Length: 233
Length: 233
DNA sequence: AAGTGGTCTAGACCACGCG
DNA sequence: GCGTGGTCTAGACCACTTC
Image 1 (cartoon, rainbow over the protein chains, first blue to last red):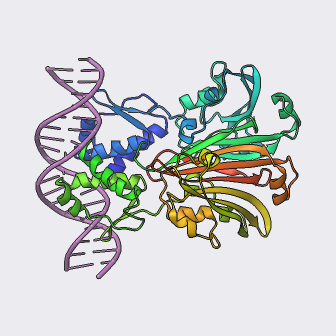
Image 2: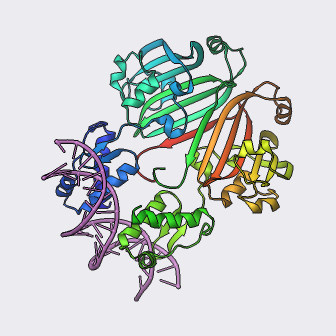
């Protein structure tokens, strides 16, 4: 393990474990130099790597800070609900806290024995017209404060993105025929094509949330962008 | 413009313009130091950035080389046809070279006046059973050698990935009802849900290819993964 | 004004791996 | 063996931004 990698890993651990939260200030380069007994370039390299990984932002004179979690949607090129749907509003139809069962574990991933999850069913509307259904699980082990959230102002996805630093996300996308309940809720014919997105998010090895979002397929599409080339755009 | 950024941009230009091809050797650090009149750390930083961007690989004693284009599918988490479909084979149904018309430009993007494109229609089979249809345009300005390719051994997507360094890719994914021709070719009922992926790829500002791939929605799904955290995994 | 990050220098030692 | 990259040092000057 090189020295810069070691320094970097220590800071990374503090961020991913939640000890350092978004916005918290890191020690200055000088303090890190003194603490680790290395040259300033070495500390600089460790911090530069953390910046490249998106975990830290640095401002002259102000210092280095834990970065706000980036928008998952932005990174993947999948627009936010509120950008995607003009005149967006949402309604929480069901809300329950329960001990995770086998079906929940299958969706969200491995959880500790007896772990509790928050289960949500949310309808997203565009200008008052139902536009998408969201069926979500949130691990209360990863996000305890979600138990008390009511998701009145922000839908659950946005609420989570503002609070939880995630490290890995997976989207599975498929086409399916609308089943009766969804078709009725979204005002489409049963059997019409739908786009179903299943999104799972982790922080380190720990599952955070799993969401299934169903869109009328002919009304919406999903865009995914990837780039090579200059670091950070 | 900082010195390391300047050095990096020069090398990047040689790679993206195709002057340096995958596998070509770059000057050694010492040669770059002499050529640019900077300290070795500065050259090192420029090369490290190129490595982080995936454009260069470095090996001790051997030198620095232009990286092979990464698998687009791997980066986006979309499996290759040949991994996705057990017993994969393919058939080129139509193959035409033409001057790009308005419809072609709308799909692939802005092309020079009079630019020619290769248009392909390919059926992908799994164990002899039709599994997906691919409708693709390739810009012959970006990939002149495609005009002579027959795509017997490799399907066009794989063939292109092995040859063209791309810098940006966009996938648009939607659900649609199968139209009559596609339904017939894939052996599904007309109106059944399909996953339609439109993929566009650029090298710098230059469009390279546009592909529309139609899958039976109930038989296949697409996975997209994203990661934060330690640079390079 | 002062502290911070951003960059650069001119050296150095080491580990790896090709010839 | 020896050229290469990988890392590190101990300084330095500068630009920016907040105080």
